[in-house]
Length: 160
Image (cartoon, rainbow, N blue to C red; front, side, top):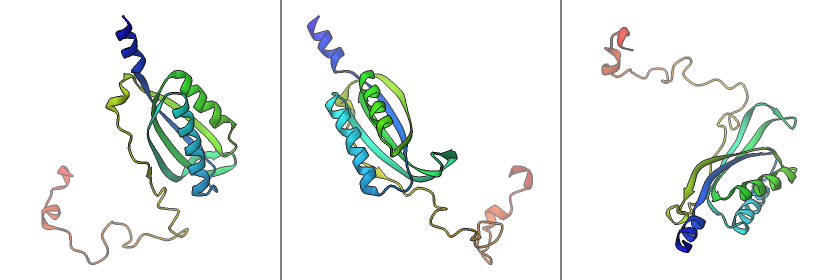
């Protein structure tokens, strides 16, 4: 019976938490928030699998009077009390405007899930492009003067 309890105790639930931080934060401040969440997960007996910073993106509607936010995705293993503690800490941070946690799987063996390297993505491409700049080449995706390959040109319209 004791071996079964030890086996059940080792199994954790798999969660992901996505939180939005204010768009004017520096990378150092975002890393500080990541380190805080990582510390909570470690302290509560969980295991962080990966942090992914999706970058600065436009939100569907203004959040905290901002049209954009930095999206951070956290993938980790832990218990229900761990999720409550992570959310409580995120709620207390002024830099965090929204968060949501989702359970992905139950009874996951932490030994089967390797810790992955943190990823940082670039965010919206539109942000680097000056406002109102038109796409080159007009309507289509090909620059002017580029030939259409014959195998595409000969396709009847009803197949397209």
